[in-house]
Image (cartoon, rainbow, N blue to C red; front, side, top):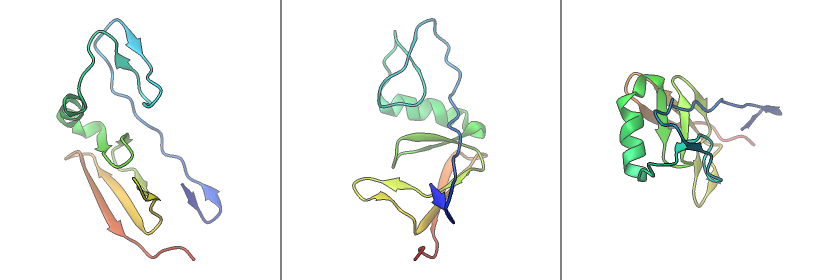
Length: 103
């Protein structure tokens, strides 16, 4: 995201995988186990079990570190600069609120 002409980047935290063959899929930042192609629901449930590490945001399909803040990407609208989301690491929930839009 961009704030006051400065690029703000939040690192994506990848969960450790318990498998021997890991692959990087084109549409994902983190590797997945090759021998077990989990469904999206299974991946979300797995990440929710370890919510102290961060949150999964369904809007842009990303995993965020606990305490990180970002402008959400919401398909089909794209980047929403009039909102800020926060990852509540203790619960694994994403909380988004309206903010004043930049001019």
